[in-house]
Image (cartoon, rainbow, N blue to C red; front, side, top):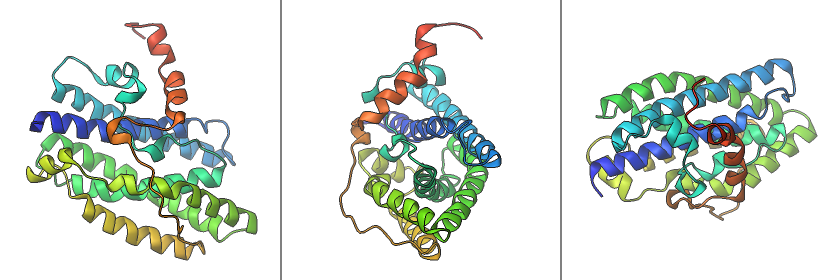
Length: 252
């Protein structure tokens, strides 16, 4: 594997995770618990899709095979996607969505904080812009962690259940392989061990302040690096890709 191939693979991991979580959040449109939160979630979804657009466009340029961001988003099969498994998990109830978003937003916050220092100028520029948005995302989900965790007995229980169910997907966020090794050596991406240390510290602090308990499970669910996903991604892609595949090459 050369640097170009490694960078393309890494960009797919970043872009796919943003795209899929953006689509998941868009499913809350018209279903939020309150009107203001309905709007907030959709705005966050748009931020993620915008981030995915920039990254996948750059991935297409890096690959050099003439595929743009639309081709990468809509014309790949399930096994070709590299998004983290946590991003494709169903929304569940509102507390479950908040638990998922908090865990993922915290990861994104510290990852993109490091990517701002990338020697790849294009990736660094995308990270600078995206980190401003992610800072808001994390503040938003953290506030809801406190509100639900230290709220009623039911909200506390639902949020704790969400954390317990999603915890097994968190170790995958910090897996590293040959792709990471090559790009770390070139100063293009950060060592995820540093990101993990910051993530763990922040997550533990918020969980404790929200009167919640850190999940005890040690089970790890992973596979997205090899294109192995849960059953949920296939259904998500069938919906997300339907219009583009039904009317190929259409101009809107």
